[in-house]
Image (cartoon, rainbow, N blue to C red; front, top):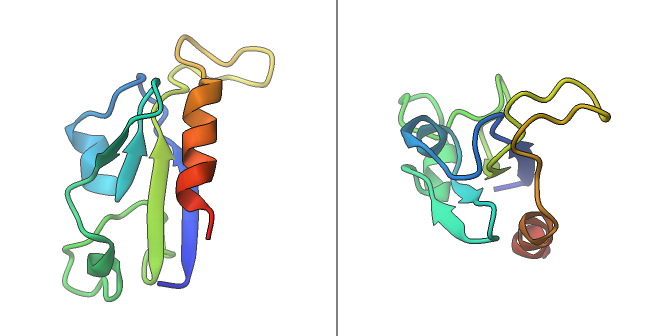
Length: 98
């Protein structure tokens, strides 16, 4: 694997089934990491269709990590009903450090 791509889910603070299909790791509101459906190794080769599809055209060799939240985001002054939390961001940064 040669890259980690960090996302937000654009949903609520906890992962749903769709989120788990698209990311290797999800971080909920409380900073808890939840594994997605696919293993990191599944993204070594994406030609079989069995991989975490988190970045259009950029999934091969990529680990997808998503923080759960940001549903209703419009702009920096209107972040919606589920803004990312400090503990969530800290957990994400800790998980993605080398």
